[in-house]
Length: 388
Ligand code: KG4
Image 1: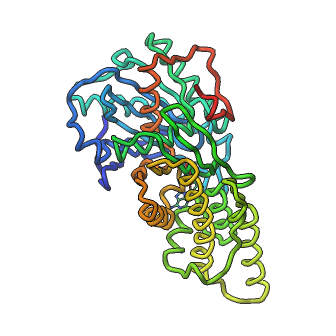
Image 2: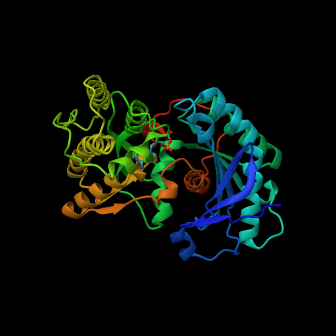
Image 3: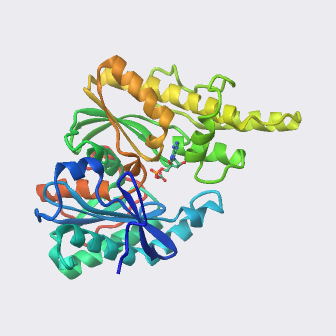
């Protein structure tokens, strides 16, 4: 059914398959993985994992070598952008509409890659799913679907913490990535530094006490009338501006710990915008965006440096939607060079929510025999440190 490959951009294909009004994005093979192993060799276990914690309905299949045989994402952004943010009720309904089609496409893409005519749920060895943290009404769709599929096909179920998925996303670009490491998790809902002592052994070094970094990007974009999501458009505007034009506050920069605060910065930017408008001055949008980004990045880098000093970790890595920000990536490049620490970053296609990263976690847990019962439920919150 699927006539794929309408466009090809760095290994990302836009499928011609349309599900629930969304064009599927098929990350058929991430570059590093493509190089690691050609397809068409079935290495068990084969695990299909589902991600539905926010506004992406995604499914991926990983094989026993850790190769992603298919990685399909249906993004709902177009349905939420008109409201200026994710509307939980819409997210839940869209997940319900999309999940069957996304999983069908995921199975079809993997079958094609393996040179098989068809791949069914019975051909799999396990089903993985994000069970927390996120929007409960969105998570519950993936969890219920995964439980149903696992039960019907008589396969074990593996629950995955979404944040751990973002850490594993680093393996997509660098299959040899391994802890110990410091991870900066920066997304629309989270901002934290984590000491990854081993796979499954995590210590949160510090987190935001109010807004998340991505949320700050979204709110600044909203104040400037740039639409949702704010990150990509603020960084595109920022690239044309002067980061030193406006001195915005660097909250908690010298707090001596690894906590963050973003709400004061957001208020400072909004107040600046309102004052400029009230004074009848034309806004210099690129300068505002560049200066805001610089304030965010300065604090992120300062705390990352503290975390690397405190832990002595030899590797630094990133996760979450904001990890796609070019200024942040460049600043971390500089820091890691200075500190002689290895920098690992997920490919741009794996920074935001995807099921490939969930499948990689599920593979490890499957191997450890950490299975979940059918009483497993979606949870809005989950403690990363208590995961295992
Ligand atoms: O991890 P993610 O896809 O999911 C949620 O946490 O919801 O992150 C989405 C967030 C949004 O707030 C978006 O504005 C931000 O990541 N984002 C960016 C960039 N691309 C996405 N922020 C800064 N720069 C970017 N290039």
